Length: 163
Image 1 (cartoon, rainbow, N blue to C red):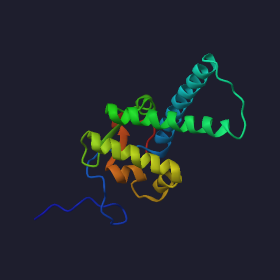
Image 2 (spheres, rainbow, N blue to C red):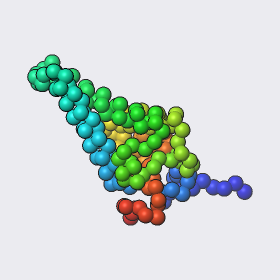
Image 3 (spheres, rainbow, N blue to C red):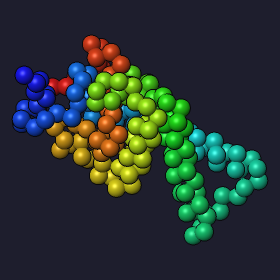
Image 4 (tube, one colour):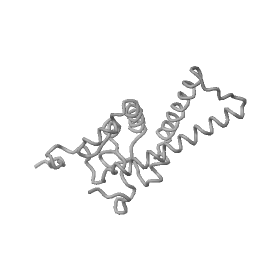
């Protein structure tokens, strides 16, 4: 007799097949805040180099969009570097999270790039992260798109326990 797929409390088939727990929303949010701080530090370094190179900070209708676009480029570059490097972002490392597939294996480059694209889509629409509030396994859009999710490095020593 074939093994039945794992189901949730609502009898819906679970997407995550491995036994690793999905990181809590608060754990993920703290990792995102840490990554945002790294992006802002990088943006501050860009502004410092711009100023030291003789650039002027005249904020008007023409220059304000340029500075806003550069903040977006800095954030995009930060995420893309970690996706291509095949490692967890600084925020995920500080929060002791790792990325694994729904089957419990480390993700490959394709899955990491899909996750990065899903994260960009999620940030543009602001709906992807809200999806986790309705999802039974608290998975976001980027989790579903890439078939990966963050989990605590050592599940026995989780900082935040699921209730």
